[in-house]
Figure 1 (cartoon, helix red, strand yellow):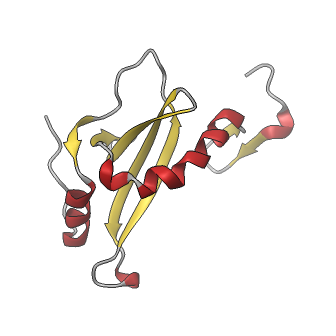
Figure 2 (figure 1 turned 135 degrees about the horizontal axis):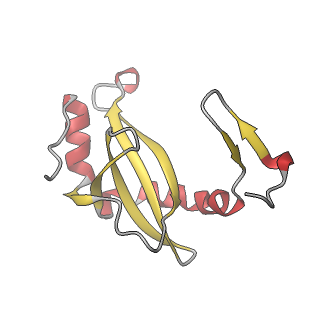
Length: 123
């Protein structure tokens, strides 16, 4: 943005961005959301590259906060270990609809992760 402070820019091999203080502030809700994931509605979502992942939506600080995640079996930690990876989390555009489709529970997702399978998303 035109009024962004250039000192807050950061780059990697894919893009340049400006640090987003609002988005950073919302990240403090992530530990609680992750702990409650087994009691939260989860839905199927697709990343911008088209890869299947999952989303839960939280009302944090009066904004809809989308937390996009995936799970995989974590063999290094044991036979029944699952690694949950938050892939992205941000305030959702109030003008846009829900980013997910269908419903799926965390226990079902963990079962798929342990079997190294993927659930079938809704059409």
